[in-house]
Length: 81
Image (cartoon, rainbow, N blue to C red):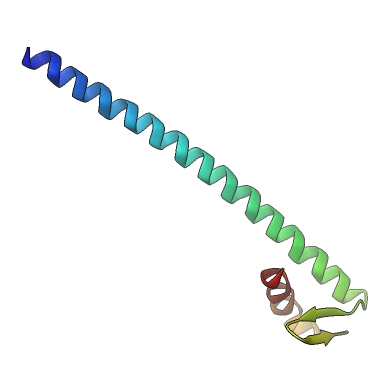
């Protein structure tokens, strides 16, 4: 009788581990997709700035920023949107 109870507990733990693994797989996949989208938006924003398009960060309109701060500005712009 005790062996059957132990087997059930082992099965319960295995089931919980499988559910946890699936949840982790989904979370990692979602994170990876979001990371790729973020990188894409930064690249597009950098291209806009490099081509002279006016962008906005906070209440400030920015045109032709120095190259040394373009990436930081792009990250701020993407974070805001």
